[in-house]
Each structure stands twice: as C-alpha cells, then as structure tokens.
Image 1 (tube, rainbow, N blue to C red):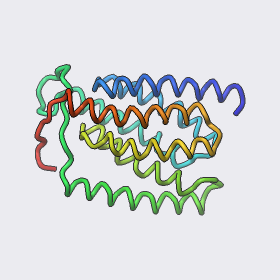
Image 2: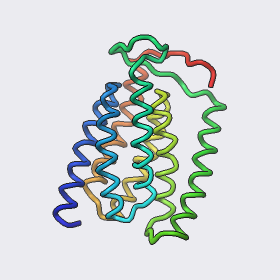
Image 3: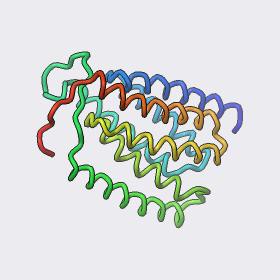
Image 4: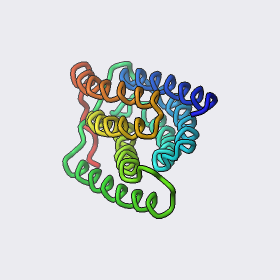
Length: 198
C-alpha cells in the first residue's frame, strides 16, 4: 500500500479500537464511531479489492444508525442506564440467522466470482455474510453476537494477511481476542433481560 493508504488504514485501525472499547462497555456512542470506521474501511477495501467487505461496510453505516436508535434505551424500553444488559437469541431465530448467512454467502461468492476481479471470493463472501448477521445481532444486544464476531474475526485475519493489509490483520487479531473476553464480560457483569418474542 502507498503511504497515503497506509495512513488511512491506520486511522481505521484506531477508530476500530475505540469502537471495540465502547462495544465492550456497551456505550451507545460506539455506533457513531462505527459509522466513522465504516466510512474509512469502505475506501481501504475498495483499494485492496476486498469488495464484499467493502459492501458490508456500506451496510454497516445503515445498521449503525439502527443500532444507535435501539441502544438509546434499555432492552426493556426504559431510560438507558449504565448497567450492561443483554438478551439471548432463541434457537428458532438462531437457525434463521444461520440460514440467512448461508444464503448470503452463496449469493455474494457468486457475485464476486462472476462480476469482479476479487482474488479471495469465498473468504471475502464468508466474512461478509456472517458480519451482516453479526451486526444485526449486536444491534439487538444478543449475547451470542460475540461468538458470531469471533468467527468473523478469526477468518478475517487470514484474508487481510493474504491481501497484505497487515495493520488491519493486527486489528482483527485484537478483535478476535476481545470477542471472547466480551462474551465473558457481558455474561459475568451484565444483566440478562427477556426480550419479547421475535
């Protein structure tokens, strides 16, 4: 990458780390940082020809607005407190999420293969498909979103190493570790809230 793109990527890494800290502590401001981070990575992924992840970050801008609206109140609809609150995803909803991820993976991989010059269509499609569902899970404050992100982050590390965007690979290594810690932290320090039936 050229010097300019390296600077842009490092700015993306910094905003990604800020986002991660805010997500860990369940601060609604994470969604604003997410919009900034997504805008940066749209450019980085376009430059490195990781097209599906680029498209995901366009989607991420929208899901961040949705998350910001949902996170302004607690899960029970009352005024937001500083206490971490989460809910668990139901088995039927989890199965639907897996189905949606699978359909997205097939569709995205075929688009990348037939319509782009992507060098990593299957891995790019996989991380993007799961990221779309994981972002929705994050907005809904499902505890299991941390597990979904762990899968995405681990897969992303090899994708970014292969495309030689090493600072971002480093960021996703941190993401992978923090995803595990985030799950433990929310479960230990948070309060489980029953969500109305989906």
